Image (tube, rainbow, N blue to C red; front, side, top):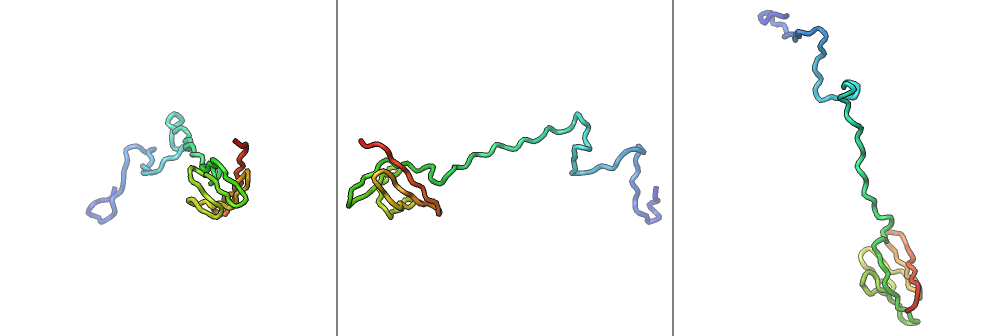
Length: 114
């Protein structure tokens, strides 16, 4: 051991010749005994994103005549060229309505006459 009066840096001594210096903040599976190995981490389940921007759209009815076309979507009466939220009513036919949103288009078919 270095002498405090000699001006040398202090020396770390241990009582166990086989002791390894402590490592702080590092843990690896290889450094743990088999009984102490952590169980594998399971990734959390991902919440499924909507398959389409149109998933929440509900076409409830189409009113169609030669001089007037309108549609009820999510309770709102709309005509071609009108917008609701991010959606644009592109066209309305007797049995379908075409909507556009974020560069995508979708045709909603309405079947049955009452």
